[in-house]
Structure formats: structure tokens, C-alpha cells
Image (tube, helix red, strand yellow):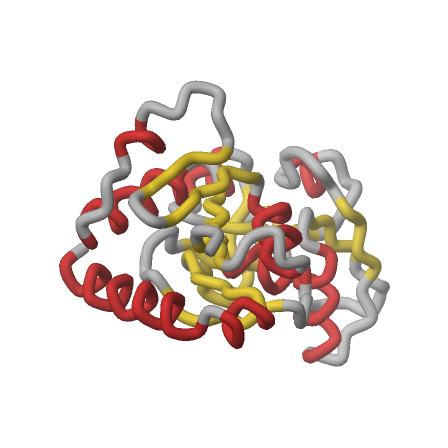
Length: 210
């Protein structure tokens, strides 16, 4: 049988995931010394390194059985092709609404404009508030939008808040917490239930140690 294939989000979540797998007792030497390789062995598993949004795509379509990805990517993708199994407790940050310091964002009657890399998250947040807001998708540094008068505010991921402060912005309201999650392909969960549940049990034990 093919090894269980796990997609890892490249970068910081990859490093934290490897720490977790080492805690479980897996040999992660191939991942640590990966060079330019993107598919790597880890004991009886196979690890695939990918960008966050692609981790979801690979798991959703069954190219990978499992994945580790941030909750931010999960809510923006808004997909039903996988199960979200557990919160790993690392990669913590939050979605927040931010505006220029001293701005009364919720005041006045004109339609507000909000810039975000996460338009679905922003739309859902304002929809729940019953606000009619124009949302502009930005790919790069979203903090620029209020500074250039393109938007009244932004919805973005905030970790320490330093970038906001340095650009004269402040948090208006927290939207939701974010952390790394384990996702599992729906078909894989049925076909390889025992193997996947055993790995999830190991992950839960490793979480307590990390």
C-alpha cells in the first residue's frame, strides 16, 4: 500500500510541524536536509511541501491524505472537501480589522471600503454585522491601502501588531484567532481510518509535550 501522504505548509508551519514529528519519534532528517526536493520520506509516511492554499487543494482532491495548514487559509478557501481534525496550537495569530489611528471606522453613513488579502473572511465578518461594505482584494502589503486613501480599513492577519503601529494603524476589532490545523481528505478518512487515527493520537500526545 502507498504511504500516507502529508502536505505541509512551507516555512514557519513546516518547521513547527517537523519539531512535532520529531517529538513523536519520526526520522525527519530527509525533510531537514531537503535541498530543493518537495516530496520527502518520513518513516512510513511521505511529506509534500507546498504553499498554504495548495495544501488544501492537494488534500481536497486526494493527492495527499492529510495536511497541516493555518486556519486563515481554511476559512478563506471555504471548502467542504476535507475534515478539520485538530488544532495544533502553534502558528498562533489572529484576523483583525484595523484602521488609521484615531479613526472612527463605524461612525458616519457613507459606505466603507475595506482592503484585504482575505475577501471571504472580510465579507463574512461585515455580513454578520449587517454592514454593506465594499471589499478590495490586495495581494501585497495591505497596510498601504489606508495610507494611500484606497480604503478606510483593512482586514488582515495580526501577530504582534508591530507592522500596524509602524504604519500608523491600530486594531479596531479582533475577528477570530488563527493557528495551525490538521486536515484529512474525506475518502482517506474512510479508507485508511486506522492509520490516520493512530497518527492523530500521536499528534495529540506530542502537542502536550511541545
